[in-house]
Image (tube, rainbow, N blue to C red; front, side, top):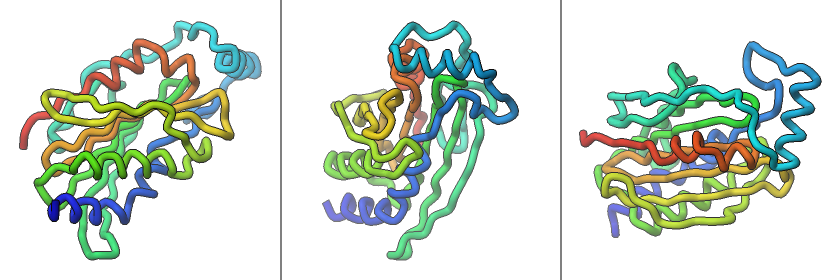
Amino acid sequence: MKRNKSAITALAGVLAFVAASLISDVRAGDEPGSAASPGEAAQASKDAAAGSELPPRRSKLTRQTFPEHHFSVLLTPSPETSREQVTTSGGQSFSATHFKAREWPHGVYEVQVLTLPEHSGLSPLALDELCAKIAEGPGDFGKAVITAQNEISAGGNSGRHLEMSFKENKTNGAKARVYSIGRRVYILTASGTKPWLKSAAVNGFLDSLQVKGE
């Protein structure tokens, strides 16, 4: 228990950062380097509001491997990547690496990897606290509300599955998977239109995490 408490303490200094960076803003025409025509933007909004079938325009997800972080996942090639080295107020340091791939105009796939200073995994209580912090983070859609949460496993590793909605944005939502494996926490998130969140592509992404031991 003592080691799990210290792991929670190590996470406390950056939970707001994790939450804010995971739930991305997705609007028609926001993809870097391109803009939607008025007709495309109107149709995307109409599809989201009506819950209609997604148009066939999608990126192909293939298995991408990240040896430095000991995992692979279904994602588009060359995702946007950012890294931060974080030091908490208690003097503990750990790294946060963020991978993002846009599925314009429907949503965003994201993978967050937190490398903790200890090798002990987070306890179920610590996982629950982390999930709550992810939902309460002030993302671009506003504060998220967890509408469903259940325990899951991947390769024998326990985790959590979350489904979230937004009070201030009725057409968008988010799904997330959170795993604590060794000294790393893997967070897979898909945020975007509600019809897109029901798609086989999103479910395939969330189910695709494979982790190799250090």
